[in-house]
Length: 373
Image 1 (spheres, rainbow, N blue to C red):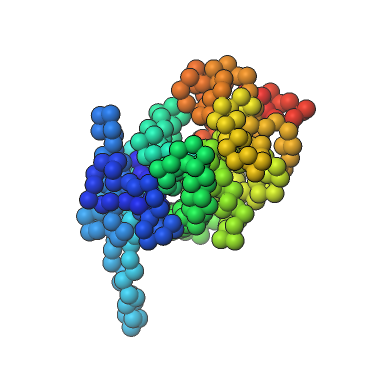
Image 2: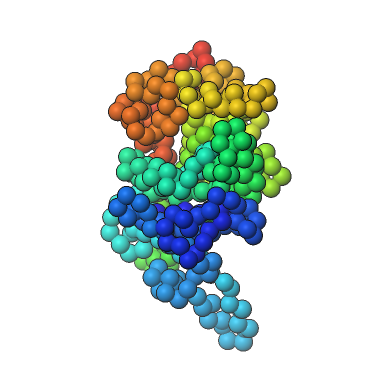
């Protein structure tokens, strides 16, 4: 799988020691792309170069040269091709193999933002479980959430600082995803239009029908954003920051699991979230980690959004209550492990991660405006 990170990285390492616990030395907005592959009980990693090499371009069919200019027109200067284009082609082959001339049904894509005090081994293990349990392809955004070497309250405070510092990095990741998707769409449009023109010429009805059919054939996958724990605080910090300006729809669903951020006035920023289908906010009143989080910073730390069943007023949010569901107990990560023994829990996350209306099989509770698992 691929990881995009604003952590410090060490390109000469090929194990998990390639990732540091601090932000990139060039600044917290500096991003690097990493390919991670399971090797027995651990992971091998490859820090990708900033610019695509000739070997990388050949592997995925990218051209590093500009298209030929018409006669009499000055040749445009060669533009750099960044590693994000290489990763986009690799991911596209997995989520939509037909578009790159391969066979297979493909799968949906999840951008996963992890939470507090997570090292890369635990993040990659979790993302791998997502792929196995829910049939999705995962792209990880990893910020320096290792507590800065501290423990307890100091660790928590350190990670909150790093989350706020990572706002620009997450904004760049989402903006780059929109840019790449737009380029893929444009490339697809040109291909289909050329085919339609060749086959149907001036037959407008047949031309339009063919174009619609091909659009569904070539773009069958969804992209959803999954945020866990303090990853939601990072996303909130982005939505309420001066750098955030995006209103375009990029994600089918935004899934906010066990949100470690204030419940008070959450509608002010949740209603800024652009999602084509659903903004899910999951709640477990017995969540042991969020219970501890409420105590970490004294009175400054208010009741947590993923831990509270009242004041659920965001107009665009679908609130899902896992409290008391079989096998969930006090879990903070109830999208994995023992909670998945409950088929209703597993079904919800599988549908939510795959961009579907996952609440439709659940029971609506008007008293607190939630769907009950």
